[in-house]
Image (tube, rainbow, N blue to C red; front, side, top):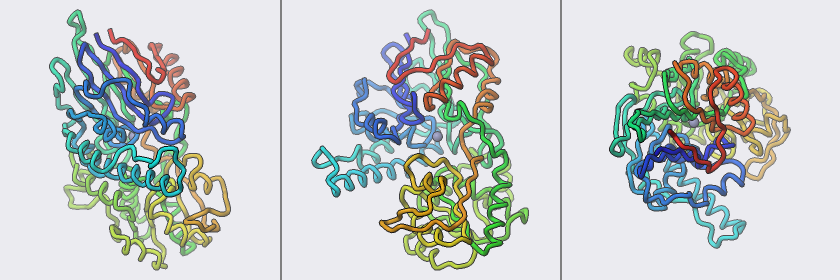
Length: 464
Ligand SMILES: [Zn+2]
């Protein structure tokens, strides 16, 4: 008998973990870290309601830490089996899981230093060795390639169009009466017509479907982010200032570089130095260039013409700390792309310290800014921001472009669902804040008249 148990990604966009069971076989789809509020993060420390040694296999939809960051913890708890993912996801995880381990170790070190811990000493959720062990278990697969992680259960990944390597996971098995069944996990669902990425694949049929709902109750308001980007850059250059862009290293930075090169080629922006100041972003850009098979036709056309899609005329990748610091002395107008995307740490803070106090510069936000972050405070109009213990006046222009989202909004989700030629037996709406999931469920019921559930944390459903 088949069942599905929801071990994360319910009532929240983080911690995605879904357990698929068929008789004695157990497969975990995604192994995400809970992030954000403390009550959520504490769930990372709770034992999973299963003996991890009885798991046969893990399948990952994509590399984002909220879908993969629990993997080293699973390994620390004794999991030693295969972890399947698209080959680009595997390459991205080789850098992202080590970075995540580094952050876990830093957090523990910080708690010990300030003494803000009940546990003495505070321990990291996992360390570098656990991450390395997790990486050694990764098994790359291609889109469309069928594989059997356990006998009689077949799996196929399809392109989800969300970030490089992102996949829908399709699982096929036979029920008690010998009928073939199929369940599809959307992972994070991408959007149409985005640079580099292909559109999300069409799924024609599934008996059961898990669909994400990050934007289950919202629409992206900025249909053409390229236009806004060109305008903001030109305005800033006019003031002889520079544009500082806090960006997520994986996905967003590559998309941005691709668009900047295109705008420059079309002479919609002048030729400017573009600094990419984040080692992780530099690695992720290399991996993206390497995986030509995962790029859309436009990106591949550039490739066969010998054009580097991620490099404007004057792009400088600054790997070392010294190179990064040199950007502070650069007084000509330029574009600086650096992490972290929400200004919670990283090299971006140095750039802000130098440029925020001047009206001629622009800080441009292109990603979601969570509550409690410096990014959110700046968007809310705060006049001073604390960086490295100093109060820095915010005089630079603050701009925001929301159209760079990598998640489908509810109209795009409904459009994707329109590809289904018949109703699934059940749809499970997951990976959303409670309001977003409830709204999307309501919309799917009203548009398609399908049976829709919004599962709760640790709930279990039978698959007939
Ligand atoms: Zn994602």
